[in-house]
Length: 536
Ligand SMILES: Cc1cc2nc3c(=O)[nH]c(=O)nc-3n(C[C@H](O)[C@H](O)[C@H](O)COP(=O)(O)OP(=O)(O)OC[C@H]3O[C@@H](n4cnc5c(N)ncnc54)[C@H](O)[C@@H]3O)c2cc1C
Ligand SMILES: *[C@@H]1O[C@H](CO)[C@@H](O)[C@H](O)[C@H]1NC(C)=O
Ligand SMILES: *[C@@H]1O[C@H](CO)[C@@H](O)[C@H](O)[C@H]1NC(C)=O
Ligand SMILES: *[C@@H]1O[C@H](CO)[C@@H](O)[C@H](O)[C@H]1NC(C)=O
Ligand SMILES: *[C@@H]1O[C@H](CO)[C@@H](O)[C@H](O)[C@H]1NC(C)=O
Ligand SMILES: *[C@@H]1O[C@H](CO)[C@@H](O)[C@H](O)[C@H]1NC(C)=O
Ligand SMILES: *[C@@H]1O[C@H](CO)[C@@H](O)[C@H](O)[C@H]1NC(C)=O
Ligand SMILES: *[C@@H]1O[C@H](CO)[C@@H](O)[C@H](O)[C@H]1NC(C)=O
Ligand SMILES: *[C@@H]1O[C@H](CO)[C@@H](O)[C@H](O)[C@H]1NC(C)=O
Ligand SMILES: *[C@@H]1O[C@H](CO)[C@@H](O)[C@H](O)[C@H]1NC(C)=O
Image (cartoon, rainbow, N blue to C red; front, side, top):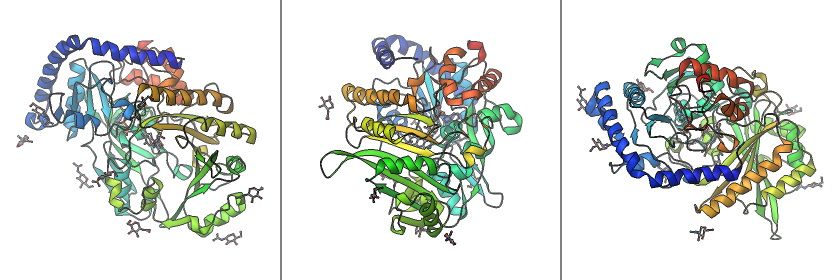
C-alpha cells in the first residue's frame, strides 16, 4: 500500500510533467482530434446534429460543460488534467459512435453520469481522454401497473424520485440520499439510502439494462448474458461498458411515512453505544435510524459531541414511538420531533431541504460544493464506551464542526441477500458502515494537506475497531488511498486485488473473469477499475 506521502508526490510529479510538456501533447492531440471528429461525423446518423454536442477547449462553453457536475472542488483546479473532448449525446446512437471513435483513435474514454465520483474518475485521467457525458440521456418511464421503470443513466436520483412520486403515492425506490447523484455511477457501485434495511440497494433492484459494449454494440440483459449483467450491478462504473439505461423494480411504500432528525448533546456516549445494539439488530426492517456524529462548541466553550439520529420509518408516528419506546427508551424520542409525510416528500426532507417545492428534486445543482475527502469502513462488532470516547477525541482534533462521521445501520434485508448475489459483498455480519468526511473551503495546498492528513491518521487509528483482512470499503465511496491501478489504469491483477478485495471481497475474481471476457484489452478503465487477466 502506498503511504500518504508517496501518493501525494506522485500527484505532484504528474501535474508538473503535464505543465512542462504542453507542446508535445498538443501536437499529438491536434491530429487525434481531427481523426476523432472525422470518425464521429462518418459514424453518426446526423453529422450536423452531433457537432452541436461536442466541446473542445476552443469552445467558450467548454469549461461550464466540464464543471457542470464536478462535485469535489479539489478536482476543479487548473492543475487537474482536462479532457480533449467532451461529448453530450442526445441519443443512444451518438453515444455508440463516441465509444467506437474513441477506441479507434486510441484515446481513453471516461463516462460521466452525475459526476459525484469521490476521486473524479469520471472526468480525470493522465492519458489523453474523451468524456462521454450522459447528461442529455435522462429519460424516465414509470410503469405503475407493473411496478417497474426504465431510467436512463444521466437522470439524477431526485428526478427518479420525482417521476415515481408523480405517478404513485405508494411506490418508491431504494437509492441514495443525495438527490443530485447520477443514476449511472450510483447503480454501478451499489447505491444505498434510507430504504436499504427494507429493500436492499439500488443495484439489488435492477432487473434489466442496456449497455454499449467495447465494440459500440447495444446489448440488453438477454444479449449481454447473466455474467455481465451480474457485474454491472455493483462491480464499479467505467469498467464493463457504458450503461445507457436500467430497468428497475419499484418497491411498495406506505402513503404516510415518518421522518425525524433527533439531535442529542447529552449522554452521547451511552446513546451511541446502545444504538449499536438496536439499530441493526432489534429494529424492524421498516425502521432506518442512521447516525451523524460531529463535534460542536458547548456553552462552556469546550468541544462537545453532537449525535443526530436521522430516521425514516415506513409507517405512522404512533407505531414508531412504540418501537423506540420499547427498544431504545434512552433516546427519549418525542412526537414533536417527528413528521408524517409522503415518501417522495421525505426524500427532499431527508436530503436536508425543507419548505421548498417538490420540483427542487429536479434541480441538478441543488447542493453546495466543497473541497472534501471521505472514507468508509465496515464494523462487525460494536465498540465499547472507552473506544467511543477515543473516537470523539479524534473528531475533535479537526476544526470544530468540520469532521463528520455517518453511521449506517445494516441488518434487515441487507443481511438476507447473499454475498455473491451481486458484486457488492457487504451483507450479514455487518453491524454498520462508517462514512468519514471532512470538508473545507480554502483550496490552498497547506489547508488541503492539513485536512487530508487528519482523515488519514484517524482512519489509521480506526483499523483496530473495524473489519480486517481485508479491511473492507464501499465502492461508491471511492478512495484512492486504499490502492490504485498503475500506468494509466493498465494494472496487474496483483496490484488491483489490493483495492479490489476491499470493495468486492470474494467477488473480485469473478469480476476479473467477466472483464477478461468482455473487454480483454482494458479499453474501459480508470485508477480503480477491475482489470482483465491479460494485464497480469
Ligand atoms: C454529495 C454526495 C452524496 C452521496 N450520497 C450517497 C448516498 O447517499 N448513497 C450512496 O450509495 N452513495 C452516495 N454517494 C456516492 C455516489 O453513489 C457515487 O459517487 C456514485 O458513483 C456517483 O454516481 P454519478 O453518476 O453521480 O458519478 P460519476 O462521477 O458520473 O460516475 C462514477 C463512476 O461511474 C462511472 N460511470 C458513470 N456513469 C456510468 C455509466 N452510465 N456506465 C458505466 N459507468 C458509468 C464513471 O466513469 C465513474 O467511474 C454520494 C456522493 C456525493 C458526492
Ligand atoms: C440533422 O440535424 C439538424 C440539426 O440538428 C437538422 O436541422 C436536420 O434536419 C437534420 N437532418 C436530418 C437528415 O435529419
Ligand atoms: C464548438 O465549436 C465548434 C467549432 O466552432 C462547433 O462546430 C461546435 O458546435 C461547438 N460546440 C458547441 C457545443 O457549441
Ligand atoms: C421518454 O419518456 C416518456 C415518458 O416518461 C416516453 O413517453 C417517451 O417515449 C420517452 N422518450 C424516449 C426517447 O425514450
Ligand atoms: C443521562 O443519563 C443519566 C443517567 O443514565 C440520566 O439520569 C439523565 O436523565 C440522562 N440525560 C438525558 C438528557 O437524557
Ligand atoms: C403500541 O404498543 C402497545 C403495547 O405493545 C399495543 O397495544 C398498541 O397497539 C401499539 N400501538 C400501535 C399504534 O402500534
Ligand atoms: C408534500 O409536499 C407538498 C409540496 O411541498 C405539499 O403540498 C404536500 O402537502 C406534502 N404532502 C404530504 C403528505 O405531506
Ligand atoms: C437549484 O438550486 C440552487 C442551489 O440552491 C439554486 O441556486 C438554483 O437557483 C436552483 N435552480 C433552479 C432551476 O431552481
Ligand atoms: C462527503 O463528504 C462531504 C463533506 O462532509 C459531504 O458534503 C458529502 O455529502 C459527503 N458524501 C456523502 C455521501 O455524504
Ligand atoms: C488559505 O490558507 C492559506 C494557508 O493556510 C492562507 O495563507 C490563505 O490566506 C487562506 N486564504 C483565505 C482566502 O482564507
